[in-house]
Amino acid sequence: MSDAPVIRLAEAEVFERPVRFRFPFRFGAARVEAAPQVFVRVRIADLNGRTSPGWSAEMMMPKWFDKNPALTPDDNIDQLRAALRLAIERLLSAGAGTPFGLHAAVEADHHRACAERNLPGLVASFGLALVDRAIVDAACRMTRLCAVDAVKANLLGMTTATAADLSGFDLPQFLDGILPSPHLAVRHTVGLADALVAADLDAAQRLDDGLPQTLEEVVAAYGHSHFKIKVSGRPEEDTARLVRIAAVLDRTSPGYRATLDGNEQFESAAVVAELLDRMDAEPRLSRLRDSILFFEQPIARAEALSRSVADISGRMPLEIDESDGDMEAFVTARALGYAGISSKSCKGFYRSLLNRARIASWSTQEGAGRYFMSAEDLTTQSGLALQQDLVLAALVGAGHVERNGHHYVDGMAGAPAAEQSAYLAAHGDLYSGASGRTRLSIREGDIHFESVLAARGLGSAVEPDWSAMTPSTLNK
Image (cartoon, rainbow, N blue to C red; front, side):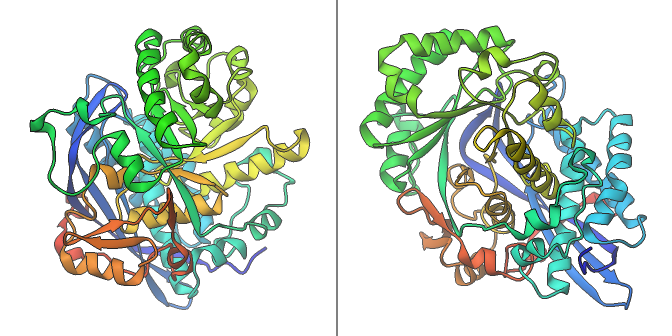
């Protein structure tokens, strides 16, 4: 067993900050123009009475965690607040344990409590994940370590308690063998409504903020070599749009790699197969087809894990994302023919690490290369949320990461100038200053974040400016 500190959650506070996007984007069928970012501030105490603060942050994005069309964006955001409140209540009453021990003690009960309130698994996961990360941050600060060193030495006290299928797997050895990279390729997402070339924008849509808007401009500005392409579940229309996207990428990004994301828009595996058939038959998609690494969550979560997808997974590796509502999802998906799973901070720090351990275990049994994990998150904002997610992406061994928060928001817009300057000063490898903003620095398609991995705590040497946020009603 590790020398993980035994702690309790003593206090938890929640704050919010509004974030408005440069232009709307789509999550599947939904169009989103603005959303709040939530911040959690905790204080933990050990058995000797020592205390330590910790923080976490995440966008509260509507129309992804629960896509029920009867719910408004405000309804969706209130769901996330409710899950966060339930997680805080359970962790405050959980008593003492290791950081992971606290998580394991409440996880099942938290998901049950959320289900009783008709909150889906992803919503439940969001609430617990946020508080978990703040506790991880606090525990690392208490032990004066960066998160990488804490994870490798298992000072979070991780076990297989929430993943019974890993019983017998040497988790401490796996964690000790993690070798995080301080740089990642940014996988730029091409949304369903995104402009591809200048002719797609009229004068009224043009922004005067010095940032790229079209796919062609994005590649020229950042030098991307990795792309994530959204598809709508309508094979004929998707094929026509893919031809247009391929025309840009074939010309501007030699050697590019791509992934597809169905965002649950395909009714069945048969419709996925139709899209693959059309792509195979279209010579203008030859280069794009060869570049594709995997297809993320094509089928709606209500159906995705109900039957085998072996017929299509043999043609293109399939990954679950929205279906990953609890710790058993990847095990279920594997049995049905899925090979991959996404890592997202909003679904859980520990879940990603344990799912990555599953891949290591299964690879020992079946050979390396069959199972995989990718790092995904469309809207993560620069600052605390981005940096915590980059630590997780590095820990799970991602070579590239979906990252579009910088594309939809101008730098750290919404944060006060002093906070932006503090992030730029502390993490100058990750950010650059331009037009009065602290912006993500993407060079030749990559981001560099050695300072993030080295920072005491979970990825950030900067404390957010709490005075520039609105205390949440959850604090009352």
